[in-house]
Length: 254
Ligand code: ATP
Ligand code: MG
Image (cartoon, rainbow, N blue to C red):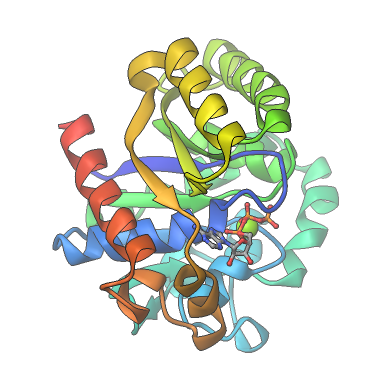
């Protein structure tokens, strides 16, 4: 049965989608069966996996509102060799439309019951908000992977996220745990990066992944080609780091 992980951080632009897409491709590279779920109306993970978000028939939106099943909405990333449950702008409406539904925080979890035996990993790319969409991700998952930049304000937002995870764990999803914090867009030349990185290790110990993702322009270029960075330029430092991260994750969850 699939291990289900949310890639979450309510701060915007911290590398959630880059992590989700490249981890999906990295795990696929290790011959794992992977489903990437785009839970963000921006549809960046969808595009980054090489799927045209404008031309989706059915998407995660229909799935959440009970108007379509996961299998019918799932596409394949030809460039990344994993499956994608895609999203586009339509998903922005789901937040409001779900208000009427019972157990609305459990819609994704319920939908995934039908496919979780078909995958080794299901990765959920969350939007930059502690919203009903993110809550659906947290309720469906076994764990959370938190990408963060090593800068001063990163720590401030982290406590809100960790608190939310604690509440979800206590009230809605006893399976949920923080799998780890992933340092991304790391610039070793910046003193502040080094300091914040050391602080994270002090406070969170083993919860900080050993792999560090460097700032690397090839990772930023890849989405415009609809190819995951780890495939786009496999030799680049960023790609290698995401491949190493996939291996570390597999070892960590044993
Ligand atoms: P949002 O909150 O809007 O969903 P996000 O947390 O998903 O954003 P990304 O979209 O992954 O963040 O990354 C933000 C920007 O930083 C993108 O332009 C991406 O290409 C770039 N980026 C991410 N990781 C790296 C990296 N390691 N090196 C260089 N650029 C990166
Ligand atoms: Mg994103």
